[in-house]
Length: 260
Image (cartoon, rainbow, N blue to C red; front, side, top):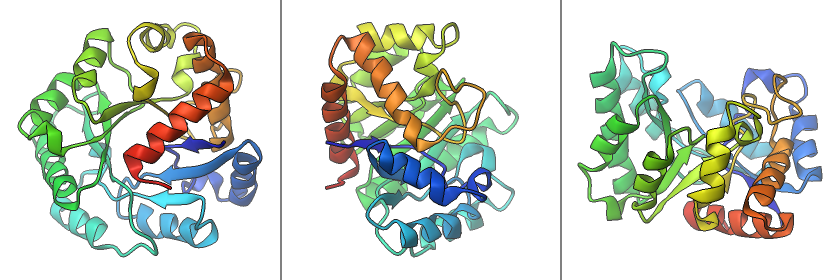
């Protein structure tokens, strides 16, 4: 039995000094698989370097993050999807719409999101969706597609109960739950949704490291080893054993990303 961190930026510069130690911390904590979501062309070689060192533990994706969309976004996308990783990618992502940081380019964000969803359908890969203050916009785009041909995860789910119920209707989509669920005040709504709305078969674990470290490490650099803290919190909320949470969420992730 092992844990999977379905969303970790261990290739980030925040880990340049001690990346080997951080990966070993994860392995020691039972986190044997880590998915590294691409966010821009600069991510590509850094992710590939990790695949070279930890080929059995790390998995790559391809995608352009909404915050990283540049003027030559078509060139960015061509570079990302033309890159040849040393092993096949397991998802298209991190893609989506973010209206928290920027709203003036919403139409461009929608266009880029749609284009990458089409790539996912063509490649028959799940998507990793970044959504911030944009659930209605995300839903509008998704429902332009035959939803039965799409699968994926709403990374770092931050919506309300109504959003959650709508996503549950998308049969092949899951919820990425990370450190926020452990936050006493700002995580209370997510904790309630995990307890009362989300079926455990719809949850995968993530850290989004180096961001959003769970309590008691909140405010510090997050790392993949801390995904176990989130698993413990979900076990408490679901009134299930930690072992059962690990078993089910790992099976969910393996099924979604087609990881053995």
